[in-house]
Length: 207
Image 1 (cartoon, one colour):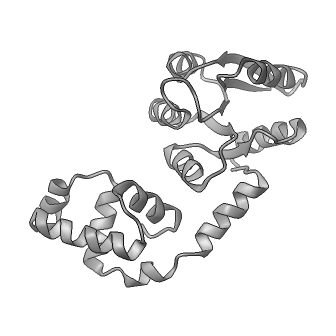
Image 2 (tube, one colour; image 1 turned 60 degrees about the vertical axis):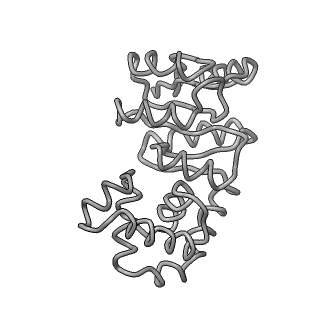
């Protein structure tokens, strides 16, 4: 039997998911939570096999909730179940540690199959999300070849969450030099911020 916890702020959806799970002998819903702040300590305490996680929650977002749970209990598998299907939500969720990504219009039988797939080591995604991910991996190839080796080094450190000063110290250059390289990276990757650069680098396997 697969134990499942649900983090969803809309009561009707939360209860509907609980009923779907408990109607099958293969699943047991061990907890439902309306917000991340309540969910985190409870989930860490009961250690379910799989967590169904919404993104848009009151207070802390579902993505940050994933990050907190996976940071303390990496063996818990988390499956995003949300209305959001934009590339930023998808890749931020996966980067935070989610194992799969489904939209809320997923039929109940497919949701149950996806939970089993996650438990067996898979990474299920709704078809529209999967197409977007594949499209993202297949696009944007030119900038990866345009980055110099030094720009690649800077981008690697940037993706590790390091500050300009930390990058400068690691590469034995000045912070102004780091800023110069980052400006060029932004231009070549066609982004305008650090977070955009990191997301694009990760989803296109530049780092």
